[in-house]
Amino acid sequence: MIRWLRIYVLPGAILQSVNIAGGYGTGRELVEFFTRHGIGNGLAGMILATSLMAAVFAVSLALAQQFAAYDYRSFFRILLGRAWFLFEMLAVVLFILVLAVMGAAAGEILSREVGLPAGLGGALLLVAVVTLNFFGREWVTRILAGWSAFLYLVFIAYFATVVIRSGPLPAGAFDWQLEGSWVLSAFQYALYNVAAVPVILYAARAIETRRQALLSGLAGGVITMLPAAMFHLSFVGAWPGIVAEPLPVYAMFERLSVPLLHGLYLVVLFGTFVETGAGNIQGLIERLDGWWRERRGQELSRWAHAAVAAVALIASSVLSVVGVVDLIAGGYGRIAWGYLVVFLIPLFTIGIYRLRRR
Image (cartoon, rainbow, N blue to C red):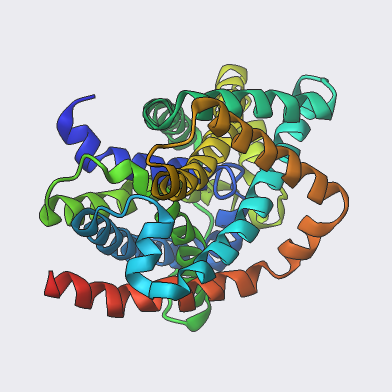
């Protein structure tokens, strides 16, 4: 891969990859955090969220580069010292939730669109994720980056089609006013999504200087949020009715009635489930590799990596069946505030202090 792509594009592409399936792939999260406030307020919220995410990503990459901390265990030892395990507690809970949602969603899509048993979708996801993690970090980063490029092409085609076919804009769609609710929503959205940053630090190994890290982080915030902005703006013609749709992007494709584009979107969406699963699990593998390296002087084998991926996915599915995931999801908001305390506040205090002293 071209050097400047590995430095300035790859980290943002990986961050976007691990966030999209649980985030704006269906459009529901975008509606909840942005579109329901109006198109104008929602766009202002996206700019705020992008700025916050870019700042967090930039400082995190700089810290990882300066201290060669490319797994979240090493990273939080720098930030929290002996209290690093507090992040791991939150991360494990989030892993369970994200992986369970991915498995269920993959099964639902194949069942709904192709007529295959829901369990087959989960099985296909398992095989794809385990295969990627078996081949290791380089494969994971290359596939995730390549799929992100394909995703961008499909999303641009979708957005262009919406613009070409759009009619008059609804009255009041772009009204903008300074009120607290959209600001809080933007902050919460950024908080949910930066939780993935420490998990994907393995994508920053090509970064050589602090300046490169900071620029890469700023670019990463934009790369992550640009497709979300395209989706949000594409909802203009269907606003405000789109707010009530359980799957807003599906609703938009039904309005467009372009079968080829709809089919490409379904392929992309299933691929994002693989991206999110493999990207998150690779973060867990990097953490385990670091621990094993300290004990045995070498990383875990490929087969061990595959086993970690399989166990993580199967365990999440089992926990989902017995109701544990529903319990976690019920407290998801509290988990997000936990990241504020354990990650963001230490990052912008201890992290910046340690960078200045370096």
